[in-house]
Length: 293
Image (cartoon, rainbow, N blue to C red; front, side, top):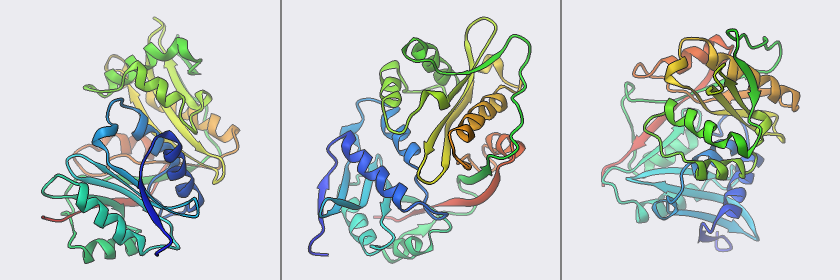
């Protein structure tokens, strides 16, 4: 352990190191996806000072990372061959977190990490607390998108679509801090591809719905993050069509699997029903662990 160093995050090149670690270790019990990391980091601007982030390295290779978010939430990942680094990441987190009840969300399948959290005084939240599902679908036998007359499925063309793309996202997730500047950052992040940023265009030219998929070519798996529909166009099957359009593009790009992480608790059941109707099946669920200071 003495040859391992820890240093603060210094910018987008370090996010790429974090993503590469996740990609190299990808498997059923790996919660973060390279795309979700890019979306979370770049969907907002001006937040870096609020997010203490650190990387643990040896000989230039990233072995673990921790990302603290206010008021006290930790996103972390540790190389499977260095599980003891989880203790160091948690120790670092406890030194930078400001909240009275720090929390860590993991997959139920991450049993070793759950045991480490318990050793540090964390306890799992009650079963009725909000949680996410991990859902998966292979990309065989995808149906064609079905659209109402006059609606068109296409992908984002480029800079000319940024204002409309941001407008539909902000309407779907109001209130939202996504801006044209932040979305340009998203589009410039690895592994974004505009061919997998699918949108449904309404007859009046507005963008009515969208599905962004982030590809991981090395593992043949793409993550849907995010999906949304403008309130004026809900209950028309447009989110389904946007997802199918993006999923078909993902398959054409060589991927074999798609994953998505919707809410799974009774407080927000609609997205999971959409994905289940699209053929996604539950593989795992998250569990949040907290401790009192």
